[in-house]
Length: 286
Image (cartoon, rainbow, N blue to C red; front, side):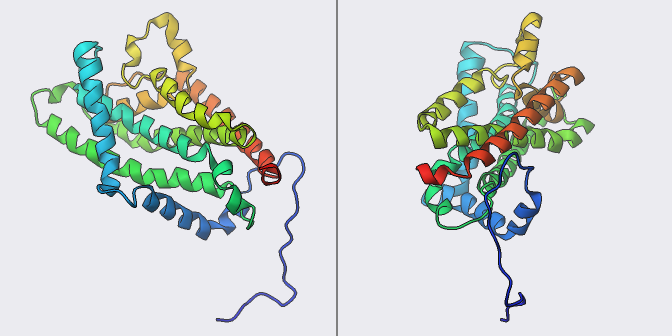
């Protein structure tokens, strides 16, 4: 194999100064590494487990069973005439992808300090690979949801829910969740590089955030005077959009969706900037 580069070819790596726009060209140049990390993240996550990728199905199903018993039977929280199993499974589709990506990216700098100190590549590739690899688990969970959907659709409660043309908007809702989870994860990755206390805080934060998001309850159960406050949570509209697209039961509105998209864009943009600022010299202080 011959090298096509000229003999005087060299790559100069310089420290950037000031604010830098997202380096799409640099990410594209390292796309082979990106896909390699995507496959590594997906394979190694359950490499030494008995069930392997089946955990992507088992975990949301077990969680749905617990939600159905605790919040459906005992707390008797209504689910907008949708079978509770489908209601919780659908909510967990959006929330599960958000939580997985958030947790995968939140410790990017701290967990890869050794690798970053030895070789140069765009540091954003690591959180991007986690975001993309989690899409594979999302597809598996979506397939399991489809199985439950078909089973319930053949039952007596089939007329209370259904998939319409709004299901075509599901990829955009998923992109919304991906952008938000990446932005929040980058923020926490930058903070964790400076203060390791945020490593413990991440798990606690994701639990509190879930209860502030209409995963176990519909947005219609929130009093009208508090609905805007709940909608300030940028995960509220994506979860409702998932239910609206897959079950025809979500509560969505253009103003609230625009608010959620605006907050997501701000979180993502600021997360990228903060991450790029911290990754310049964090290896020197770890």
